[in-house]
Length: 429
Ligand code: CMC
Image 1 (cartoon, rainbow, N blue to C red):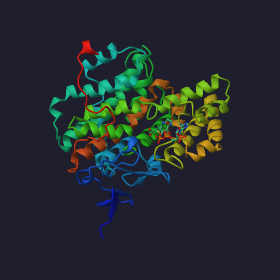
Image 2: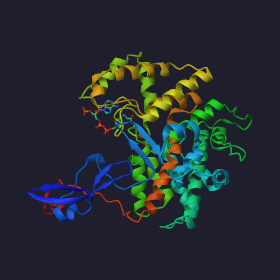
Image 3: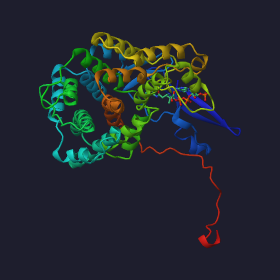
Image 4: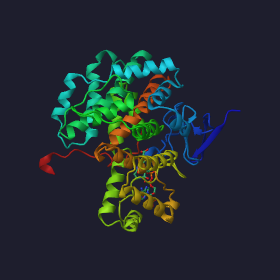
């Protein structure tokens, strides 16, 4: 029997259909509610608002479950590669070997930057934040593919744009890094796989090849996989919203980069390490910073804690913490910030303020320490999140484009400004 919900407004009852997802998630379909009742639904931060139905990622924040196309994240992080995960997210299933080879080869074909693009790097301030340049360069890729910028590209055309984005984002990021340190660009190599090629472009020099380390490659692989999608978060919703106006995939993803940049979202990994440095430099008094975060008169937050949907633990954080310790052990490294992070996490988990609000370490808490150990500068951390999130953005844009129910995104509002009043000429004000 079809499920229904009833909403009563001023004594009048309205019956609305209830939808059920494959994991038994329920939604009340309010699409006709305003027309019938005159009311909109108000939901700051869209905490309880669905904007689409999606078959890409399932997450249950209460149980700490995250699955890409049905496959638990723990299995993917243990067994897959970032490129295979990207294929899974974008195409809905795991590839055959031939399909994977073809997909990986398309990255090699699209790795190099167009000559004209190098001017972007020359003109951007050396110390400018790399996310600004990443967003600009990603959007500018549209200029090189006018033939692909149709409102309804075919699957083959989307595949070309996807390869272009997934491959170029890594080249652009490495080039930005070289520019920031005043070093020469190192071009991509056709014989290297996705992550080694990125590390090569980042850390090889004209005179010396980067010495590839399996532990580093594997840690970065895991991080990219864990960041690859997270359903309707701020940046992915932004990508879908921009794309809903029929803007092209390059433009939509460029907006996603900007949304990700914020410290409450993908910029948190940079802020975590900066926070740990601040605590360390101030003498390591963890309690002082915890108290500051708990003070209702202070806006200060402990970065890397809390999540809109995870209310018990973030399964990505559990894996990243383990990988972080493994990497430090394998490389024989020590970092006082790691010790501080462990102590801070333990102190937070014992504190009632954080327990009552269900604030646990999130994906960004330990990821920055891994990037730091690899030698990636702090400002670049959100860029690495963006590389990792690229498959998710592409998959959602593609899903939105191919769903006949998609409409231009256009939330409503409750107006709280002045009522109608007359314009007063300037001399009479
Ligand atoms: N430190 C201290 N207090 C916090 C924190 C924190 N990190 N996060 C939330 N709170 C408090 C907040 O002050 C509020 O308290 P009260 O009820 O007394 O007013 C309560 O917890 C609920 O917070 P909220 O802002 O309503 O929660 P939200 O769901 O809107 O925000 C969040 C989620 C992730 C933006 C937030 O927890 C936060 O700012 N965390 C720090 C930044 C961070 O680590 N972001 C990365 C998130 S994971 C990567 C990603 O997927 O984006």
